Image 1 (cartoon, rainbow, N blue to C red):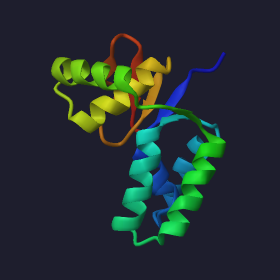
Image 2 (cartoon, rainbow, N blue to C red):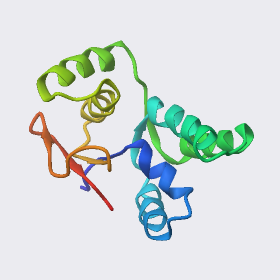
Image 3 (tube, rainbow, N blue to C red):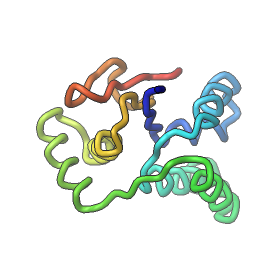
Image 4 (cartoon, helix red, strand yellow):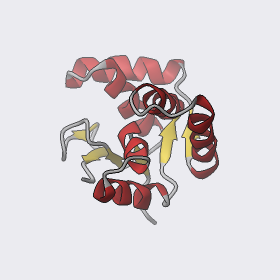
Length: 132
């Protein structure tokens, strides 16, 4: 059985970027249909529009493809409560703790993220991997 993988927002941004090496690596990971949260989709849309000047319609097309390709888990009250606890225990930002909480609740073993410390382990279950 393969490990369940959670992908952070930055992978989806790099998949759409002109940085060829990072884009290729991100696409490789995305093609394996990782788990993501509703937060990841919303952040992706926001960053593509604000920082990369995508049209709303283009960002929505990408969001639709993520909904089709990935396993999407909700950010609900349970996720938020777990995130608050994780933020306190591991000194995480609110947004990073929401990503970690969603990944843990989804039973993931790896979290692909450029934003967190490579090799960090949360709750003896989830290991952060910087794929770049």
